[in-house]
Amino acid sequence: MQEILNIIKEYNVEKIVVGLPKNMNGTLGPQSEKVLNFCDKLKEVCSLEIVLEDERLTTVAAERMLIEADMHWSKRKK
Image (cartoon, one colour):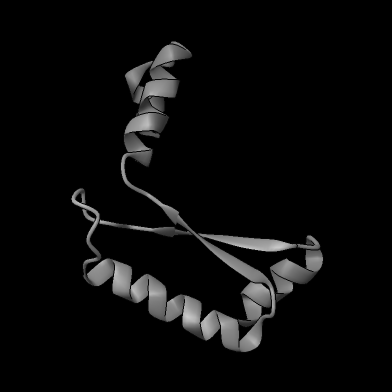
């Protein structure tokens, strides 16, 4: 938590966005519970707004953007 607080101060962070790994059907699984617990702990030490961002299909979207940019598969993997 201290490292996060250091980053917040160093970069004058105004809002924190946290990825929430939902299941494809929209339900919350074990990883989501870990993220929510982390956010609860973060709220105890930080007064900034915390926004939960649905992570479903973000990898697919990023991969699609890299393909459209004509990036070779070996570079995409890195």
